[in-house]
Each structure stands twice: as structure tokens, then as C-alpha cells.
Image (cartoon, rainbow, N blue to C red; front, side, top):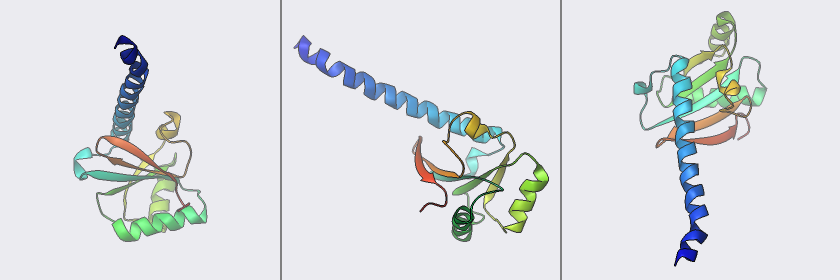
Length: 139
């Protein structure tokens, strides 16, 4: 019987470690969003987060426009724009008629903390987990 316990112990330990890491990742995402000025009480059960910069490819901008048309002014989608200068950020939002809730990431916090692998990118935060949806503009 002890042999059986020892055989399954590594799997149980790995599973527990994965659960703990995913919860830490979730907390790190929320903390970083709050650092950018996000109010977590404004969204419902899930939040789609789109990460871009002001200099992205046409397919990325087209996908952002699809999200904008469907979810503009909704609390379900948040656009994070990596841009150092506020004037460039505001110009990007205005020029593209973006109505999505948007935050400026002046320092590239999500990339610096390695929470996303590259720009442009998209995730969904749901049920205390973060699910990576992949590259923005690559349906």
C-alpha cells in the first residue's frame, strides 16, 4: 500500500503545484491591471484583455475594431496599449474611434513581468484563472 502512495505522490504534488502557480499568475495579472488604474469592480464574471501597442499590424487593428464594434463601452473587454507617451496613446484611441475601456501601459509592465509572451496578445480572466488566447490579429 505504501508503494502505491509513493507512486501517485509525484502526480498529486505536481497537480497541487500547478494549481498554486495558476492562482499566483491570476493574482499577478490582477495586481498589474490595478497598477495601471483598472477597477476590478467594474467587470462581471469574465474579462477579455487585449494587449497592443500603437504600432501594430493591420490584422491586429482589424481584430481590435471587431472587439470595439461588439463590446465598445462594455466592461467585458479591456484594451491595454503599451505606449510611453500619453499624447500617442490618446491619438491612437481617438484616431481609431476606440470605445473599449482602455488603459495605457507606459512601462510595458505585462511584458516586463513576463505575463504575456509578446505583443499583440489576448487573454481572458475567468473563474480565478487566466486563459491565454494567443496572438491578437491571428483568429
